[in-house]
Image (tube, rainbow, N blue to C red):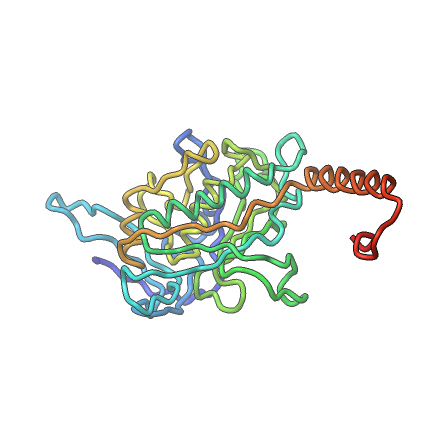
Length: 307
């Protein structure tokens, strides 16, 4: 590595809208735009071999051009077996499926689109390093208000700052993430702004969950912003066209393998839960069936009555 920089900031990294994408649209980090690329929020906490938040670029090739510009930042999740050994991380959804994220038409962003996008985002990272993401039950409660069940990586929507101001003003926050060693329960969490419209195919003012999630998860695993515009971890994150279109850039891969080593992980989601509307229909049908069944019987048992 040819440069290291210690940073003393200890807050979360905030990702914002910008100008780059596979389709020409993306999300940028306003923190970087305001403070300069090398001065955004970071942690000077570490773990294992990562004792300080630090920047790292690959050694230059023969032509003098660095082959990668990935940034290691914010510590890492414990890996007692060393690089290349498996690491299991739990994840959960606090409120992502309650209809709080809206599409431009005002309708809720489909729960299956949200779930599939985030699972795919986890999967692209797990495909190149031995990280095993296992979904766990989330009680839906806020920290400090009784929350006891949640994953190490916790996904939720919150209000950050709402829609972008009109051009030519700079775009503002769409999502944010917390580094592994942010401290307390927030470490590893990802938040999406429910003040913004979301959609499957991302555009500049209307982001997609997949592109935002790939970028933010990179931060939760210990990566900062790269200098390569083509990478997901560039301070302007890549926009995608929904599940099935996400992919890592070689710079992303080089960075995350530097942190955790080479290997293949996995994503294990919980059994799919029906959409609220489907649950209501199924429950109504079940109640009607029970009512008919009971009317047709001349006698019943206590256990049947309880059911």
